[in-house]
Amino acid sequence: MAHPPAKPADHSEDPRLIRLTEICLRLPEVVREYNGDHAAFRVRKKTVAYFLDNHHGDGIVSIVCKVLPGGNTALVKAKPAKFYIPTYLGPRGWAAMRLDIGEIDWDEVTRLVVGSYQLVAPKRLADLTV
Image 1: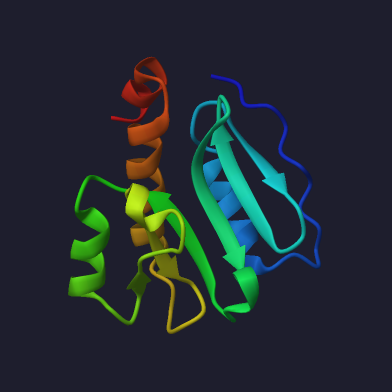
Image 2: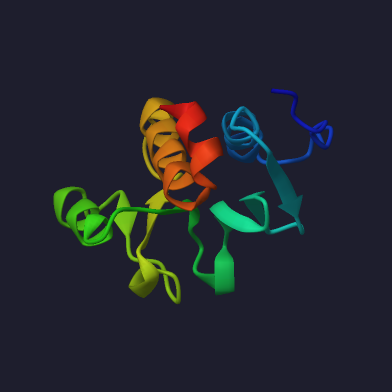
């Protein structure tokens, strides 16, 4: 399935955002919206993931994704240095993974993004990722 062309990467962009963009745009019909300090990845107007850089002055760089019910608290409990409950979105089943500490496990990021996609995308599209 053809994807719309991605916005060319601005070489001043954070390399973590560039890598995340590559992961997200491989999913059917995902597009990226970027406003300078954060990016949203959407499929048909539904958000799959956010890239946050110093959101509300918190000093954190992270990715925020939808997870299964209770998944956000389970991730935080298992790896509290890496995961946190994001403000506003956490109570609605979203989890944040820090990208500013230690080495990034891009396979883990990919699993988080694909899982979020499967939860928010229309079933026909979500089934293409299984």
